[in-house]
Image (cartoon, rainbow, N blue to C red):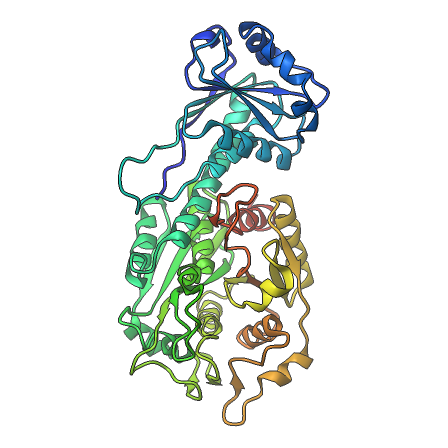
Length: 489
């Protein structure tokens, strides 16, 4: 896994600032006030901070922006970074400030003079997440992220908050790494192996191989991987940090590469289909976070791992398969494969674990990108309370999510002449009919959310806390949902 920078929370000590190498980060309020640390640096650098604060650049900067000064006089540091931020910032502004610092510092060591300014853990968190780069397949020496030292007046309080946030950051980075990996590296077997390694942090991990899936009757999932040499698998990850209550279930689509199968995708952009396991990546990252922070809740994460390839063995359009539930499905389009995977894993999760609720995640439809772009995931649910709780958690973490409609009227589009249902319903309302398909595999009275993350799992431009590529969207929101709703007192 990509290593996070080392973050140390230190007692406020301004005595050796002049000799400090690397990058020094200070804060100035929007109206130009400096705290003790910034005033010390201003004195050492012959009032250079004061001149910057009086400049047009500082006036135009938004709260959370960073203004770097290279090779300042009077100090050994190669750069002073001045962040425009109030003394009691919101979490969003503090994380933005951290992300701005990450871009300004590059890979150099950084000393952040936090003093008594609020939300320094969020600043460090934003800095760690935005500093992420995915480099395992680049040759030559790659610079690791330098250490982050944060000087504050209340060490224990900031340390406790930082420990939790770094556990979340590790889950986010794990998700990003999985989603960024090329398909010739992250095969179904390699994916399962990486998840099995998380037993070392306290998860119970079980890998169900194809023979077990056949015995369970997972004909819907298995039909997707028939054309691939990579074996289909289901991985079950359990975190039992609560009491005797039933777990909450997270289910992820893990198509490690999607050619579309016999319904072959166009060549242009097909390389992006390495991210079609993004839902499984998020579930894996959440489970890692819960284990690292020792969450007081019972949560089970299940991922269906397959590869969708064309071959003489591949499922054809027009084939009929039988799901674990027993319903038959006419496969009209083999490129609508994610719902075939999720159908069986959703049913298995409910049959085996009797969960208190289920959330599934999938890079499921291009239609959701047409509707919501890359700013929001599509949220479909049969339960207002669970849905509202998730939307609140996503909003608190700055992860865009928008509830989409569902309704029985859309079911007519899934009617099949020869089977219980078709796997697609046409171009119109494509993301909604996909959700309606999945709902058929949710038991009565089971609270459920389907998250279509096709537009947010991996993007071409940088986001607030991530460079271009995999974002890790959903790890923060789902972790907060578990913390706020399901953790035992």
